[in-house]
Length: 287
Image (cartoon, rainbow, N blue to C red):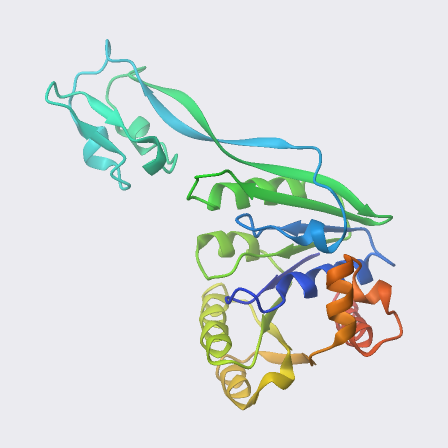
């Protein structure tokens, strides 16, 4: 079963929700938690684990054999990223940081062997056992890199190669292809929001994406006592979603966040743990 925790806006508490649900579910099930926030992964910090079992992620880039290249220009004309330019001599030249690795240049080239396979490093994935029944797979974008999508795909592939009862994805902020790649094929999508104007705006954005993906969302409103949730209820009704939990400001969550121990473990009888355990029971009802 695949579950995804998302939300559009950064800083709403997606990682807090994801790590606590993963920990609580791991009491009964084998869980693989996937930190797909590859630009700023922090699930390992919230679980007090160190990243290990590093694997490089390399992206295709074209390598030109100018002895075979006829300078026809088809590769330059068809590069949607404008990563290829032509010199006065007519030969193509690659600007690597603009290349998305799509291989279009290689596919349209009429001269066999004129464009060879080459690769560049774009990031890493990691795998660590965080708890008895909980494993963590993390993606991390390389320094200076701008394309998070290949790292999310690599983390997804590595995570899904591990047999488990539940794969739980913690996405990046936003609604781009890097988020859609993490959400795809989910049975349950939990969108975390907050009662602020930005929270309302980004909740509607993520619900639009989920509608396109034909997925229904469960909504968790974090820091629910910051302001009114009436606007959230209007948005949720508009997109046929459902608010399943409201989490008020809570010192237990703050303390668990600082200590690197999920609140469901540090304060198992507290109000916050009760909320997370109620969500776990809802998940079990649809498993």
